[in-house]
View 1 (cartoon, rainbow, N blue to C red):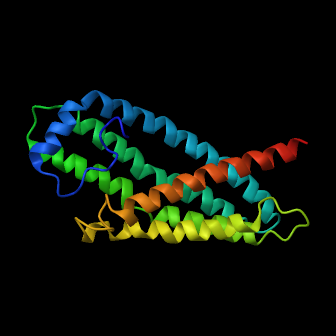
View 2: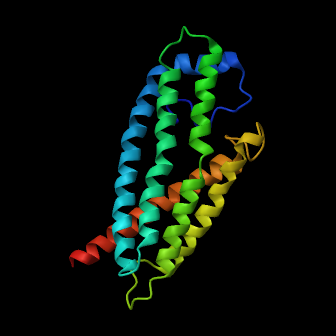
Length: 205
């Protein structure tokens, strides 16, 4: 995203002239980033699927509600971000169009990226509940990971305030709505990947 000029994020108050210039000057980089996002999101769905298998085993003979919720809402949470990639790529597609259309596509891209967090936060809480409900002698995941998931869900809630702010910590480029949420989610993805891989290796041992 840095190579596309999206880190730091374009502010909601950015002038129309500057925004159109950004999409025109960085058109190729924006398209490349959009394509890369499609592959990264697909890889993230693979992680959610592997995590879902392990939660399924934790829940055992129960209804396995949490594992179903995790996979379903995990997939749903990625759909808006696919939309973000499409919006940004389309905004960079035609430099000759009306500037207001480019602005609308850019705004929609950022909205889809930051605002629709409800599926993800319920996904996190489902994971946390499943992990903490593991009463086996050798739990698959450490209990701290369950608590981490609950906290990640809480921190993601900052994105829900994006429609009310154009500046400040709750704007789509703000400290809470973007930076805290993005860094927290990035840390969670890396930790989850390491734990899922560790559990898979133990299963083969």
